Image (cartoon, rainbow, N blue to C red; front, side, top):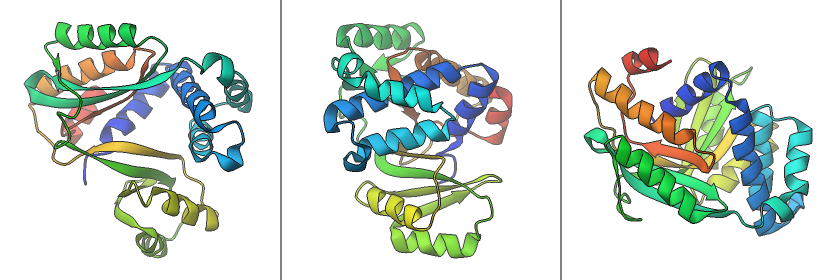
Length: 246
């Protein structure tokens, strides 16, 4: 599963250097608001809210911001709706775009305009079902965790694949096993840095450096839209591309 997490790694690095923290907080606040809208403000009885708060903490979102998002959910979150877009960047790189918006027409127009202007196109919903699979993805800081014991525990809990780098474990599981894996981590006293349901590409597509950077610039421009929550793609991100983009 090499390469699936590299875009999120790049986003994290660029977020720190480009002062995008306020945008990250805004997107997490929207997720908190829609979680409250759907399941109420009681974190104990709202799994989606617990997950959103956990991700807020993982992004170092201040407690006051988290509480403000919960308190304002009935007002600010009432009109929010989830919408998704499927399309292609240049060079046939597939894009799956998740949004939270209070104005669907504005969001559709903005996403379509950005893609068209940059040489991409929107497709119909469901057109990328063969490109992406929905998976639970959990990031765990390595810390003092014993890798061998930890990996055995996670496989027993339902984790399908584990990636590692110098700082983290990346756990991949089915949507059905997502809750049980998170529960096992809680029982082990291990706090995740991030946990989410993500569109994971079934295969990656390689491009020359300049073409890949062109695609990443389009993704980055789409990310600037306040309505856009997540963008998934099937571009293979090599070390050369990551170094050129960082």
